[in-house]
Every structure is written in structure tokens, then in C-alpha cells.
Image 1 (tube, rainbow, N blue to C red):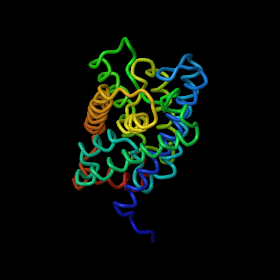
Image 2 (image 1 turned 90 degrees about the horizontal axis):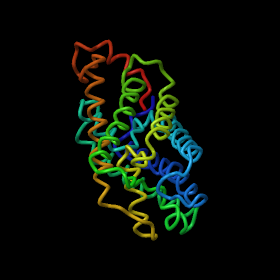
Image 3 (image 1 turned 45 degrees about the vertical axis):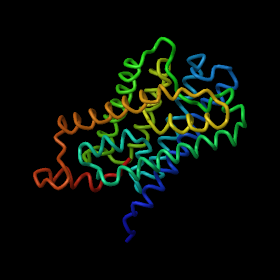
Length: 260
């Protein structure tokens, strides 16, 4: 019988998963920026569609690759959201978040390796920024809504053990693509503090435009949205806190369900 993965193994899986997410998702956005000259915001709906598809595919792939190892959060907001409802231990949050941030930097560095300096100077490594017409408060609200939608689907498709098995990766990947298609304009549609952090750091080294003053938008919004969604879904669906015997049936089903 296989041993349960250690915290080190799970954190490593989170780092690799986040690195590949940033390599493919923001990497696609950076390449599109080079082709169109529109680094910060996609020029056409077709551009948005291609970038959204890249994100959705890589998220689905990472869930099927690493979901059974680490849960495949690959997003600090998801990790914190699960910790808020005691579905993930708070003591392990720092290790997961650190791995995600390091992985995001590695992924952004990979974009530079593939696209060259133009990936940063022209494509801005797919970094997310606020549109000129989007204020900080509006940006936080939008990012919170995006994370709320994502976390709701994660809760229903992956955390709730009563959900049909085997579809979590596909459903979550499609949800990510749909969110980006809808909200890419105002904020760049990050809903993931690590996804924004990696390109920002590497843009700082390779000559890209960095707006660190906007980074709190991409931390506060997603964490608030994911935490609220996790709590609300748990309340509506009647999910129990692990260890609560009153929810034995739901917990038994969850134990058999693949994580994502």
C-alpha cells in the first residue's frame, strides 16, 4: 500500500503545479502580448479565448497530475479558503503558500527562457494589472467574485465527497476558462496571488513593467472571495468539520473522492 505523501512531497507537488500553471497560462498571455503589442490586456475576444483555454487546460491537467498528491491547490487563496473551514491544517498553510510562490517565480522564469527578453519587455510575462478605468476597491471586488466562483466549484466538485468522481479536473478547468473569458478586462483575471506574484518578480529582473502598488488587490480579493465561498458552501451543503461524527456519511464519501 502506498504511503501518504509527506508535507515535503505535497509542497513540492504544489510548487511544480504552480510553476507549470504560470508557464502555460501567463506564458500564453505573454506570447499573445508579443504578437499583438497589447501586453497588459488582450486586444480581442479571440485573444481572451485562447488565453482562457490555455489556463483551463493546464489547470485541469495539474489537477489530474497532482490532485491525489497535494490536493492541487496551486493557489494561496484556495489553501487559505480550505483552512478557514478546517479542511486543511493551518500549520501547513505556510509550506503550501511558500511552495506556490516559489513555483510561480520558477514558472515565470520559464516563460523568459522560452520567449526570451521580449517575454518581459513586450509581453510583460503575462502579468495582471488593473485597467485604467478600474479602481482598487472595484479590483478587489472583481477578484473576490472570481475567486468566489472558482472556490464554489472546487467545493462542489472536489471537496464534497458526494460529488460524482473523476470530473473535478475537467469542471474546474472549464470554470477557470469561463471566469477569464468574462473578467479579463478590468483586472486581468488573476484570482490567484501566486499567479500574479511570479510574473511581477521576474518582470522586475528582466525589464517588464511592474505595478507592485496593485498587488494587494490580487491578494485581498482572492483570499476574501475563496474564504467566503468555502464557508458558504459548507453551510449550504451541510458539510461537517473533519472529526465531527455527525457527518460520518459525508466524511466517508469524501475519503473515497479524489481531491483537486
